[in-house]
Image (cartoon, rainbow, N blue to C red; front, side):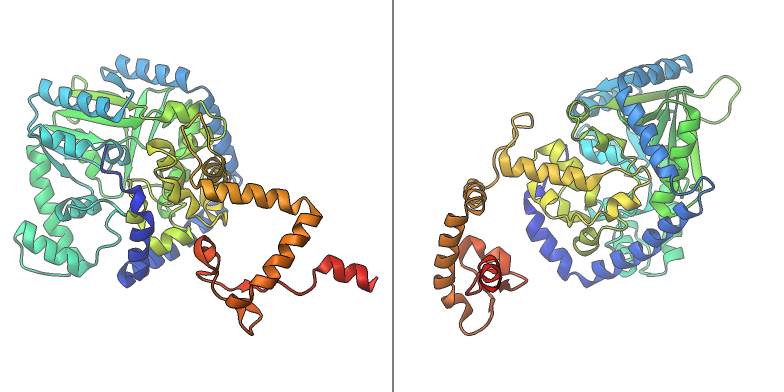
Length: 475
């Protein structure tokens, strides 16, 4: 597993809010992709209602996941590929290491893969003396800078071209330039050498089709295709939920994935991979391996409150509209998954108490659900996570996040249900509010644990007469 920094959410968010370069970059990204995706949905031949059809397709697949995964594995084996199943992140990394050892791998090129970030694959391979090179341009930049991605599809969105120019000058030994085409050519030249000398290519899996027995990778750079065809060994990592039952379902999801990710009708490079190179074929690896990863997904699947989250196809559409993500950036979330999807998935993977600030930091505005290509009800699950933090949940080993707050609200719930008690408490508060109001009609600062209420807004002063009493008097 990668280093988990979810406890730093509040502090990192404050840093992100003050970063004007980040603010401009995220605003520009959301204006382009967020608005573009909305227009793309409206122009679908089937209409924007296709998103709800896709939701039903995904839920049906999730409900039959055991059967579909077995069908996928059987069909890939028929095509000459090999399939492994990993229960944990550590087991997945160990399987990839064993494959690398079997084929005497020293150099690996890796296409963009969020699940590989989730399990900490790069670190695991490096510990075994294997050189790993990220081949997505954004991921390559992040790797050179020894940082983590800040967006699911735009991992280097927080970097300026001047910063990238200085980084390439230091790491690639080229003269400093901030010209994007020149920087891109420099990266291409460095990466082509890596591709041609790699022993193994690693990719993620955007979607898989059980009916045909293939996995699908999507990119706009062609790097993932080269990682899967040039090296003699190809390993694909797949979260176990990424499977569609039939090819017709796969086609719908693939189109919506491209729209959600980058407002495209289809990505530039789409590759269907079902096994190694066959006799007479010139392209492709000698060996193909699919590693199907659980790493907490079975527990999510077993909970009817959260299994809908397994419908997610990691397109980042929710990040491209989220007002919170727009202000704090991806690093604030402290795990590879950021934005609304990260605010639900990360607590379920690493611990709800540990990552509790993520779900409490969202606005519940619903923009994520409106943008999601498969119409996942993220706000509902955010509320459920908040309820678990407020009341505890034995299934997920969640303890009450703030026992004092929990006791306070239980007491307050009792008070508001008993008019006499409410009148008495109101009269006391009315008498003792003067030190915080002075001569104004607003409370600008509440004491102690109540200060959060007045951190960014004033609290209304308790009136001399309650409305219900005034109503009775005037009637």
